[in-house]
Length: 234
Image: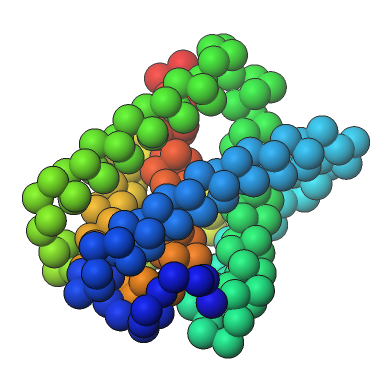
């Protein structure tokens, strides 16, 4: 338990200003570290001699469907660990597990973007665009202090619909195209607003690890589809 918390179970919106500010700093510091860790793990994975063969196995035949299923299972476990109140170590294990899972599932996309895209700066451009969108959405949430928890239903239904479309595209081998990528970028943006609103209004001041994981997942999803849009334009 971090020192200086008068009540670690206080909702951030109801906590003392110093505790609330500390919680927000911890959350975004952990988000930054998670992004840096993701970049580092991804770089290491892509440098391995077995990376190309592993990526072909992941994306060949029904391999990608199995990878998505495994990713969903691991993500569920990671979220449960990160939200655990048993120990801080368990929470960090969940965050680390999720970062590793994201790095693995990103391998095919980043491999293609770095090896075959005509624009060698496409990854950087997508990253900068993602950061700008994230910054704008974060400023909007904090400036308006509006509770966007009403987006929960939209995100649940939209997530199931998107997953169904992705599974069907894998089974029948058709390309989802730029329109779907754009729709999913909007979906990820709504998710960022929703999670940022939860940080302001609903998380407890001791839940900065799980809060950072939720934000990281939304940012990763946004980057995934922004990068696809840039690559399709290229």
